[in-house]
Picture 1 (cartoon, one colour):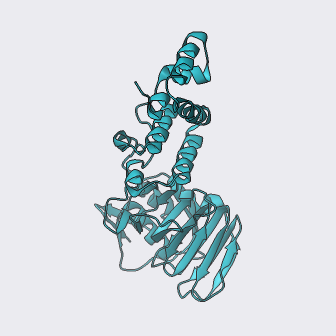
Picture 2 (cartoon, helix red, strand yellow):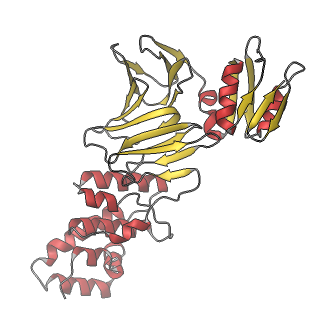
Picture 3 (cartoon, one colour):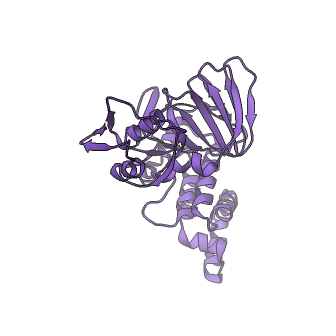
Length: 344
């Protein structure tokens, strides 16, 4: 019986012959090589794939190799839809499945079993499925929620409360482009020839591979792009692009006329990712908007409190009642009724 490359890659005795050769199996495969003139070429192809892929990988290395493998070969759209996130939820050997992918793609076989390889999805984590919409897909974190999204290219985005992101059904071959409303932390998968662009209220942030935070809520005075690591290019209005280096934050006014670059505290700016609220000389309006988004409530008052000099404080994964208790003074009292906070 003639064997194909997929048969070789998924044959346990063949893999053992390549990785741990022994006399008995060696004789079998030597005989097989002489059965047909084309067997030698198949043998070498399978051998090179096994040597390349059948190495122990960490989860991070595995995901990177799988993504790079998909980009190095020219997948059709149908193949891309089948191979979304190569993650074996059933706990079987990852490299064995990588070999099946390689074999199937080389002989242009439809990979029906790949649909079970989505990343684990929890209430606050989603894997991008580019078939949700004909054109533009929207993922949203409502008030009181946060959402982590993993794109097929390996990029991860965490949305803060009352934020949403839109992106095309398929990224183009030239650029990965998304639009953000609200706040998000981006951990971009690196590709030299495939930049990632985030648009937010007229500001364009272009990166190749980096980690950064963007805050672009409509009620805020400005848009903030804080670079944790890597390098980004900021474009606003007609002004010349500004390049950020790590530990620098660009503050862009809503008209795009002014871009101010300042230092920032990474722990404070990105604390929300770890369910930590940080206020630093915040006005009551800032405190109110943050807590309303965070806890999905509405503040009601007749006379708005004033924080002289602003309010500074930090709250780690606490209930709204605990936060307000920590903030309240003799001049600031509250009562929580359902989704409303009455300020006295």
